[in-house]
Amino acid sequence: MRPVAARLPSWAWVTGLTTGATAVVVALAVQADAGPHPTAAAVARPGASASASPHASAPASLPQEPALPDDSGDGRRIVYSVGAKRVWLVDATGKPIRTFPVWPGTVDPRPGRYSVIKRTQSLKGSDGVEIEHVMYFTTADGVNVAFSNALDGSSPPPANGQKLGGIRLHKEDGAALWSFGDQGTRVAVVD
Image (tube, rainbow, N blue to C red; front, top):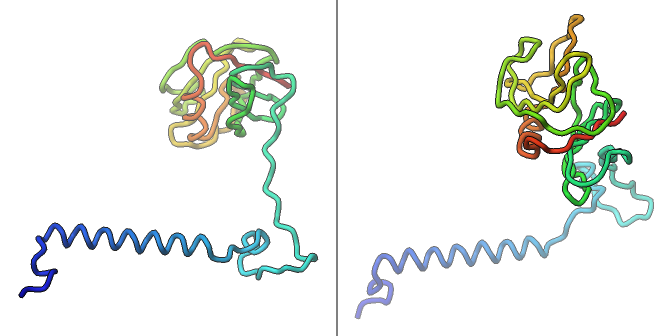
């Protein structure tokens, strides 16, 4: 009589091996999850040992994101703080979902309420840099004011006395803003 394994078709072997491997991975995952976890202090300071002592140092605190300005309105909007050089993307409930620093141009928009009036995928900026995700929302001192990011992700070059209304963002922030703000999206500018 042939052994049971010899009587099984080849696909049954593969199925059996796959099932067995899955069971081993699940068992290892459960075992790892049940194992000891390092304390926050040990994670914050690689190489430090966990200590039950009440005098163990507290974990290093993470930097706090700047709070959304109080005078920025309500509802879904883009908030730009001229003084903080920062943008917040705010959802319909009034909760900031993303914030990031920006490089403002030499001409600042006046504090007030605006909306995105035009979007352009890409063009050459007035400073000669190829830019993308251009979102215009006002004019100031005779120049257009818009959010954008350089195609190569660089910061803007020195203005050399030019009047520039571009508010430049890091490339990933420019993509996030572009996805968030359509034509008509409200923009609140605060000091």
